[in-house]
Image 1 (tube, helix red, strand yellow):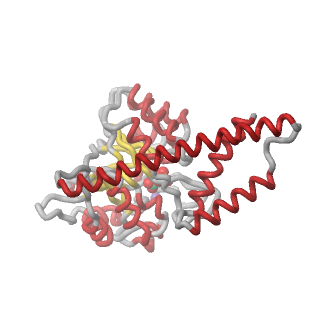
Image 2 (tube, rainbow, N blue to C red):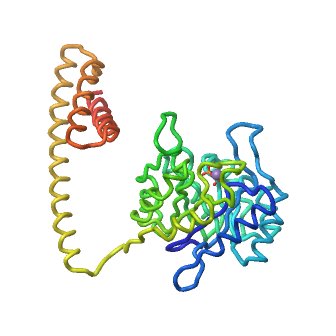
Image 3 (cartoon, rainbow, N blue to C red):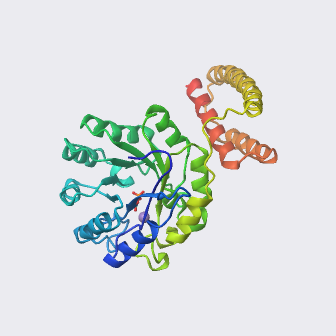
Amino acid sequence: MAGINTFICGPCSAESEEQVLRTAEALNLIFRPDGTRYVTAFRAGLWKPRTHPGAFEGVGEKGIPWMVRVRKELGMKVIVEVANPAHLESVLKAGLDMIWIGSRTTTNPFAMQDLADALKGVDIPVYIKNPINPDVELWIGAFERFQRAGIRQLAAIHRGFSFYEKSKYRNVPKWQVPIDLKQRFGDIPLLCDASHIAGKREYIPEISQKAMDLGFDGLFIESHINPDAALSDARQQLTPSAAESLIKGLIIRDVNSENTDYLAAIEHLRAHIDVIDDNLLDLLSTRMEIVDKIGRYKRDNNITILQQHRWEEVLNKVVAEGVKKGLDESFIQELFKLIHQASIERQS
Ligand code: PEP
Ligand code: MN
């Protein structure tokens, strides 16, 4: 089961017996200074959920014996994605160690219930990726279905969220969502799938380090013996030696420290933050009082609540001012949209 510094690595897709074994062998040779292995399990997708039909949809059942060879010959634990009870049955029959549920599957409560029902009485670790959309309740609901089916070894994989808007990364991390999950289910280990967030291999290290800084328990990384020739997700896969540099380059921080200088400095800064938070709340509450007054005037004069022109003016002004003050543009936009929405609701 996952724990601090769990590294699950392997190709996006199993493509051939040779590709699977050569990748696994190389990943199995990444050692910690104490001689233990870094890679705790070998991943490969057999059934691939692709956006368009006709893309490489995985080798399916045919790849099962390849994963069995990795287990038997290299002694590695192996994990594959399952999306329905038929996949699960093949995996259990072959005695593979663990399963993960893909993002598109987590989004569908019917599919999740079918899998939970099929898993009743089976004690196998299950890793659940976040749903495609940033809905922490849907993610939690997935955990609840498995918990009700008696599955105890559960872990979460954060792989980012899909949006229409273009962004730097393939999937937007929205780190607050996995943090919320962790708050609600503190005992569930949390891994970061930096590959699927990144979309491009050059972004994988910064995302991985961020996950470590946020106290994630490990990483889920795509690695292929020859990434450029990969049949799926070629741009985001690392060679095993790049995976080794990534893992060895991570700065793993302590959750807590005994150092008294550090503790004093942090305490001071936190006290400062608490005061600022209080001030923010006071300001928001004063703002709402004024919003209420405006609402009353509008009602008395029979004017609509939303005045598009005024709102656009406000938004443009705060974004410009915020950017001048070194704040992120999309942060200011989202923050003020929330404030504006709450104001409209109060006036309604
Ligand atoms: C994968 O891990 O290969 C995969 C298909 O991921 P996701 O479900 O996150 O898209
Ligand atoms: Mn992939």
